[in-house]
Length: 287
Image 1 (tube, rainbow, N blue to C red):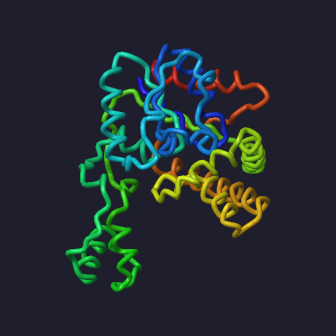
Image 2 (cartoon, one colour):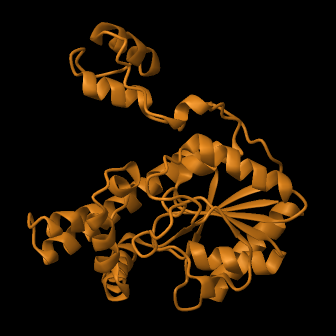
């Protein structure tokens, strides 16, 4: 059985994954695109060692900052772990739905997806023709080479029709009302600051490295502007909260349209009730 714990940031996915692994004697596979990177801990809300409660966790802290870890890499690594643990209950947890689909659905990715292709050997017209094949409703000018190259390199598998590769897969999405979620996100950012977010971001800022991971993580790019004296610290923190809220909204949209998610309201006052609801849903599905 594979249980996918998904949903927006801040709803309790990590805690639920551990409780389910304890209940079903299972293992946990990370499906957050940024938690594969070492030292990106606070900004990505990575699980702490003491929170693992002895449960085996996979695909956390497996990459260095400069590694170009792609969807192809994740698909290969996750499927290998699933195959090696097919006799166990597997809990896949994270907010990167595209990674979950790449691992669990019949998507054909190849190693070419790993590296960025600059298409230097093609004219703008040839680039445009390729891009039109990928997106017939393309609204990019033929001379906008940068955007055409970006589109062709984009690892977008979300609209492909495919089927699950594995039996007994269930998608459990944790949710809460919008006002509560936004409050949780705002408070979470404040807590991250208390835990050392600025120091973590400054460490990466001082590396002076340009890479996809640093450009993607909410929390670093906003603070980099503060370190560059472009904005104040208060403005940077407010921007982190704003971008986190927007990200949560996009996550809802994705999980609502891309996978058969069963939504469960998180009870923050009594999380055990949430766990019991999820277990009841899982047990009914298996009976």
